[in-house]
Image (cartoon, rainbow, N blue to C red; front, side, top):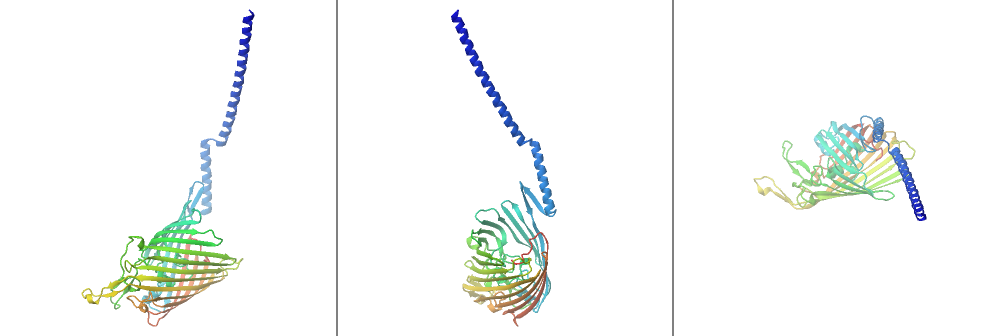
Length: 477
């Protein structure tokens, strides 16, 4: 009996101990479940309903687009990529028109005013109307396109992209663009200080400015002052590249009533059609540009170089070098465009290695053929001008130019309007009424060798009208 009672008490004690452990674990589980439910509730409060979140995001986007429309107007194209809004803010039409008179007849003035967008005859001239687009493409690229309408028709001036997010100060540019040589060549005519293109720039870089399809690498060095290097490569056979594989110039021969013309390269040397077959047909660019500001005074210095094949033959090569300097002074505290002094100078030198060729005369008489040995033709020139701003919008400028050459080709240098000795002096008065219109009156005195009496006097009045979102003119570039 005692044995059974002991066994019963032992079993009861074990059962009570097991029940206690079970209840403890059950309580721990309930507490864990309560904790998880609380954490889940907090997460749901933070996240919210998916539909509500979508509606909220759409409302915020609509509010931002509304702000963009109020800020930039209906005439600005823009789009959003995530939280970023990209705007095509530079949309413009810029017109250049001129009227004037020269003491030389039009066919001679056309050679004196050699720039493709210069006033080139007595009476009225449509210099150009430029349609421009520029803006951000996405977070890593921006792009520009410029088309020009002139009396010669419609042409593409530039269309290129640039990177805006590369590290270490690097930038890549690609497309169809003006070669970044010197100061004048990469600048559009409407941004020039004077009405016409300097003579030396016209002869060496071409009437339309040297440009072509290619790519350029820029590097802004980490220095205390602005210091940038450019390395570029472009196709050398664009029609504008007259010093390389471009179409060159045409010279008439014989009497005025004869229409016989033949295409020639520099100095009257024969022209050979050369396509882009190898690295020898590219044009290679190097440019170094420094700029330093010291209070009201700033100075920019540039050194440029070009190398490539030319049209005189398969062995023809061209080297072009140039230096340029710009200074500007504007007292601190004065209004923009009132009082300032700006100077700009540029010197260019072309080393043209012409290949040997045979000039064929009468096809029926092989004895009148003339052979020319390989030679080097040198051309150089430059300009210097000063601009003075003395009252809001009013400026006065003086410019001096020279151009010369050595060694003759088929044409006597003195008879070649593109290689004879030239001097030109210019005086300019400008009134920039607003950022969207300006008026310029310019006088030119020319001295040249290729014309009888060797002097010319010209007066040109130019009007520029800008409307749209083109960047305003830089009053002291």
